[in-house]
Each structure stands twice: as C-alpha cells, then as structure tokens.
Length: 300
Image 1 (tube, rainbow, N blue to C red):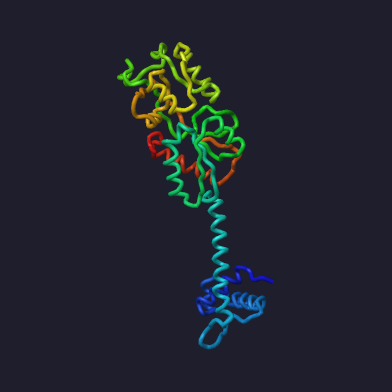
Image 2 (cartoon, rainbow, N blue to C red):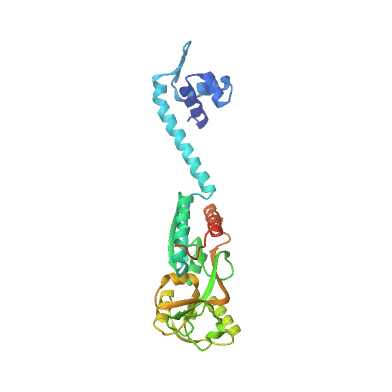
C-alpha cells in the first residue's frame, strides 16, 4: 500500500511545526484526525516517524530520512498540477504559426516578442510561406494559426488585426510620383506587374473586380511570385503594382508608394474553428489586445 499525498502533507506539517497541535491548526483539521492519519502512515511504512514526550514532538531517525523524500514527492506533485493548470489556461504547450511572406517582416517580431514576454512557457514555431501552402497547412493541421490577407476560403475562422492603405507602387521619376494620392482609374494606361493568378485565385478575383470598377483591364506585362520581385520589377521600370503600405519597408530605394483613394487592406489571423486548443485561444486574445494598442503595420 502506498501513502497518499494528503498523508505526506500531514507528515511534513507535523515535522515542520514539531507539534501535532500547531500542525493541526495550520492544516485546519482536528488534532485527532491528524493523529489518525499519521498513525495510518506509520502503519503503511512499517516505521515510527515521530517521538512524542513532554517536551514536544520530534522526528525519529527514520522520520528524518523520510522528510526530504516526502517533500520531493509533494513538490513534484505541485509542479505537475501547475503544468496542467498552465495548459488549461493556454500558457504552455506548442503552437505552429504561419506568416504570409508580405506580413512576416512587420508582424512576426511584435507577435513573437509579446508571446515570449507574456507566455514564456508556450513554445512557438514560425514559418514564412505563400498563401496556397498557408491555407493548405491550416486545413491539414500543419499550422495552428496563420497571419495573412483576405479573402481566404470557406471553413476558416478569421479575425482582423490590422488595416492599412493600399498603395500603387511607382518607379522613382514616374510622372505621378509626386502625388499624395491617386485613384485606380488614373492608372488605366499604365503597364502592370502582378503575381501569377495561380498564386491565389480569390485574390485575383478581387483584383479583377477592383479594375472593372475603375473602368479598365490592366495591361499586365510581367509577373512575379514574391513582393520583393514585384518591387524589383517596378524599380527597373518594367511596370507598376499595388501593395499594402507595410511593403514599403521591403525596399527603400527606386520605388514610390502612393495611397489609392479609399482603398484599405486587412491583415487577419486565420485558424480552424474546431481547434479548441487553450493555447490557441490565449494567443488569439493576446494578439487582439496587442493590435488594440499597437500599429502592427509599422512595427517590426
């Protein structure tokens, strides 16, 4: 038969107080109940743990040997309980985060920094990726949470964490480069560089709607899969493109970002709605709070 944790706690209390009376007060039980439990513990162990006389209560040699072992068991039990409680509160475990390449530069640092400060026991893994693999990874469980641009596809939960102006990106020296704002219709005669339609059809359907509303079909002369590639093509004078304002941090020379009137772009947290991980809920709330006090399109 093995002693239970309650008996070990009672034993440690008596040992530390050197008094059944004081230990009973500390434990908020009757002295009779305490004595019964210590007697039961001694029967289980087959050893006497305390000597009692008129001068008080003291450990026997066997009791002194048992005391550090009992404390170690109790400490380990407390640690185990603490681990589970942290897990239930979402403060421990592991989360796999994906960042769309165009959001990683400004979003990854503040999100990971805040998590390290506020949730030090939570292990995060991060990965920068493109939109197709990002969405696939959410559906197949490779990622728990992603930071990306809408629209996505049905079946995912989303929460907006930042908005920013949509800009047209012109090469330096372009006749319109000194404007403080432009409309999309003013750019009907320009050559454009864009991402491939195959990169993410929902985005391009939105682009098509925007261009139709502006009254033209863009003359797309080149395509590139990365934002850095598009910026390089613009700087080389191949064509113009449209990106969120935050992308201006990726290239400081050769291009000019000018806001498009009335156009904004959102950044969202996206996850599987059936993912009930407490750690996921905790990080969702943490980033929401962070977004309420920080411009996540300019940090990094």
